[in-house]
Image (cartoon, rainbow, N blue to C red; front, side, top):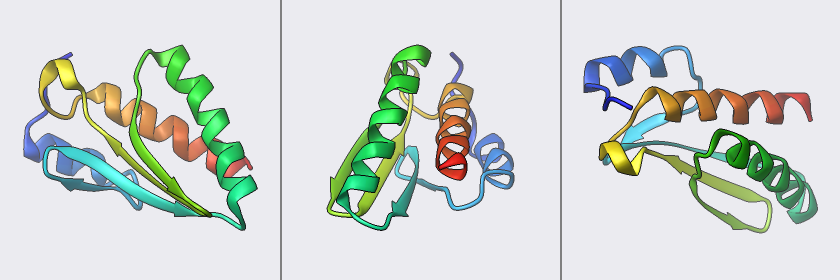
Length: 95
């Protein structure tokens, strides 16, 4: 995977609402009704991460899920990160 330039990242972020480019990664935060709902979506996301062989840096506190994506091998953001971000968005929207 090829590391994207900041311009390319900016263009991709224009179509990915709610995500930001911060310190070499794209990131977002989601809030859910409660811990059970947050953990449930994390489980669904985890299966997709395994399928894509791409894993987020994430944290969960009660009903809040913070997700940060970058491609460690490329030492930056790649299209692989945007593909996973779009998958995550689709899972959350379908819930």
